[in-house]
View (tube, rainbow, N blue to C red):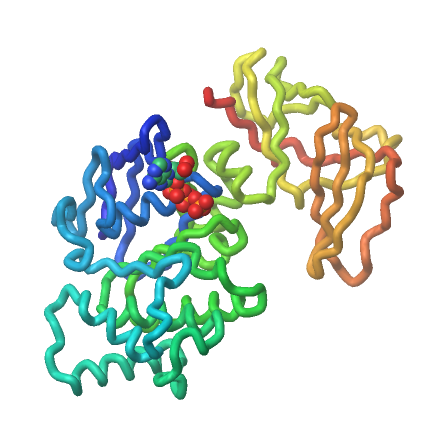
Length: 356
Ligand SMILES: Nc1ncnc2c1ncn2[C@@H]1O[C@H](COP(=O)(O)OP(=O)(O)OP(=O)(O)O)[C@@H](O)[C@H]1O
C-alpha cells in the first residue's frame, strides 16, 4: 500500500495540496479526477519524489519514502508529453528506462535486449524497434513512454493525463490496452485526468481531488449514486446543482420550490445546494399540475445512446436532462416553450453549503 498522510504543498500564497490523505493499494487501477489547476501534477510529483511536500508523510508498505530519491522508490512516471528522446529509436528509448531500475542494474547486453523485447511485445510495438520515435504515431509514442516506465518493473505507475495527446478514436483503444497491460503485470496504475468520463471508465477506484484534498474515493458507481458533496457532483458532469435554502422541509430557490427528501434534517433558512441527476428528470407539459421546476426548452443534443436537452429557468439557470434513446427518438420539444421538469424529490441530494 502506498499511503499519503496529511500532505500539504503551497507555492507562495497558492495552496495546491491542503492536508491530503490517500491510500493506493497494490494491483489496482485507480483514477484521480481533478479540474485544471486542482493540484494533480503537484500530487504526482510529490509521490514520484521530484518534489517534497511542505508537511505530511508518504510511505510504501509501511516504509517512509520521504527523502528517498525518485529512482529508488519503485514508482514509475509516464509524463503528459511522453518526454521521449526524439533522436533515439523506439528500443533505445525503452532501454533508457533500465538505467533507472530500482532493483539493481542489468549488466549483460543479452539481459537488457531480452527485457526490452519483452516490453516491446507487451505494449504491441513489434516491428518498430529500430524506428526513431519521431517517426512513429502519437499512440505508438504513448506506448513507448509506457514501455520505458514499465521496463523498470515499478509496483506503482503514475500516469499524468496519459490520453490527453491522443485523438478520440485512439483514446478509446488505449483505454482498453492500458487496462489489459495493467492486469497482466498486476501493478497499480494511478491515472490522473481532468475528464470525468475517462476517470469513471478507467478506475476500479476513482478519487476526486478538490480544494487540495481527496473529496471522495470509491468505485465509480458509488460516486455516481452518492456524491459526497456538491463539488464532487459538479465534477461528475451528471448533476444539475441548484443553489437555494431550506424552508420548513422544502428546498426554495429562485425558480421554484420542492420538498426535501424524507429523513433529511436541514435547519430552516440554511443555505443549501441540491444535486439533481440529469437522467432523473422527466419533462412534462407546463400545465400538467405536477410538482416540479418550470423552465423553457433551449436545445437538444443527440449523443448516440441518449439525448441531452437544455432548459432555462425564469432566473436564468440552465438545467440539463438526459433521456436514453429507446426504440424511438423522444418527442421533440418546442424551442422557447415552457415545460415542467418533474422528478421524485427523494432522488434530489441536498448538501449544506460549505464556506469557500
Ligand atoms: N512551480 C510552481 N510555482 C508556482 N505555482 C505552481 C507551481 N506548480 C504549480 N503551481 C500552482 O499550483 C496549482 C496546482 O497546479 P498543478 O499543476 O498541480 O495542477 P493540475 O491539476 O495538474 O493542472 P492541469 O490539469 O492544468 O495540468 C496551480 O494553481 C498552479 O498554478
